[in-house]
Image (cartoon, rainbow, N blue to C red; front, top):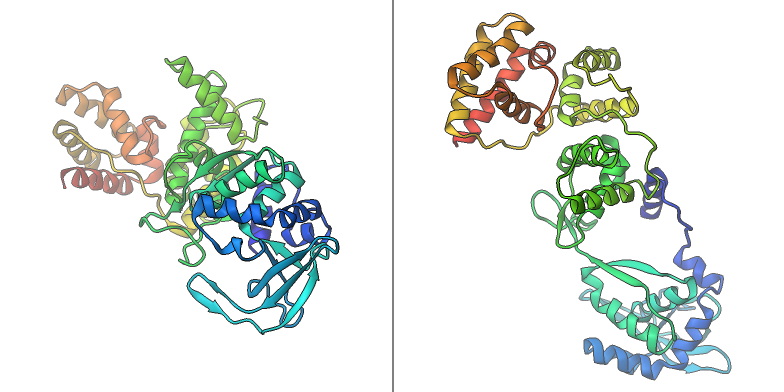
Length: 417
């Protein structure tokens, strides 16, 4: 099941890959040469493992697990002798401790041809065999298996005579509560969940933009990454200037990686994620797409085309169906800004149409000695999580004055808390 989820996610993102299952690799004899070399040099293997991580186990047993011919278990077997001329190992099914739990063996003793596919190498050596047999040039790995990677690097060079791949170490993903995301914890967050609310490229951005340290992985990360990807696309196509050219090159390169080095020939339509959700939330049932498109056209977002709009609307509709309104990041307000927002709330209460809503902001800005543009940016950050947005008056008319007032009140109270 987990393999099918992985392959589906790779297909959706458009990655080029060749899938090879571990079982098939052994059954087809892909690792046979490496298995023979490692078992012929098992003493040296044991020495390297002991030197690197202090584990003495493989100075006494072979780095190979046989599938027991009697009970069918694999990790309960101990392969204790290799017969090179026959390519066979002698083994006993005597039991083994795995993650603090003892797995009882059946007591069977026998021999097994290591070229039969009825067994596998220990992780302490298997990586190196894969790297050489499959000609792997790059492989990222999790921090939790760094010891195994270090051991395999040495074995690859010193025993298999092969330069190990270039590595990048990554750390675990955490949920919003700071817990490790894992199957055992019951909080697995799959790419398929992300793809219901955001683009594959936005998930690539989460993965590629920072390898060092732990990362958050949750649906709350989708909105900022969708908006950040739009910004990077503007930089890539020259619609957004970056003062630091080195930073600009970095953003353009990262954007290409988000598209698996196959970026589009022209940019898509860019709309703040939270605006899409707000429109989806108030759209008439059965007419959602037409309503959202009409409003976005009226706001001026579709002047340069609507490439990608259908997907964005579906992401927003999926979000509203599953979660309701989006969580907008808290905006820190100064006392002056909070006072101005409070007066806008009062002014909106007496305004009757979109012209009145729009004029309320200009009136408050003038009365507070603020630039209207600065006040609009604050409003958009509160309502959309973005410094820019549609004309304020028509937006309030579409979303509903009560909804807008509620969000503004939450921002003021949250800032003063």
